[in-house]
Length: 196
Image (cartoon, rainbow, N blue to C red; front, side, top):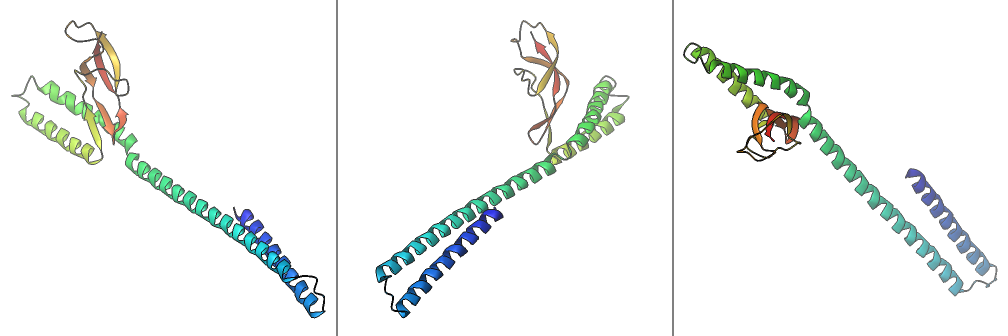
């Protein structure tokens, strides 16, 4: 872009120099008594020079506007990329924490049969799970559960298919592992059982 600007500037300089030379020639001719160049020719030369300058100015203005728009677009794209990077920076860390969430759920399910003997332990594990859920929510991590809905390959991975007369084909019957999203992007697919 700067080479183009340099060429335009050089062209303008040459045009201005040419105009000055024409004006000097006219002045010399008038002084020396040579009246070959009439007022009409001088005016025509001036008008031609003015038109050329106006065209050059319009081109430079157009180039400036285009460059400004391009820079503005680049700024917006960079800002969007920065926001995405910040938003999804914790994805790998969050993925590792999902195993912790799964183990807490399994511990709660295992204690379900012995609630009386493990009441305090169950309460502690549930509190830990609740705290983990709050942290997930703070960072935009959400669990989804589509049991009873039609299988969606964008969110779930089929682990098993079962014949079920009551359910339509392709409906999710059970969830073997929970699925999670982070800011509406899939963090982990759910592992599900689907009706044949």
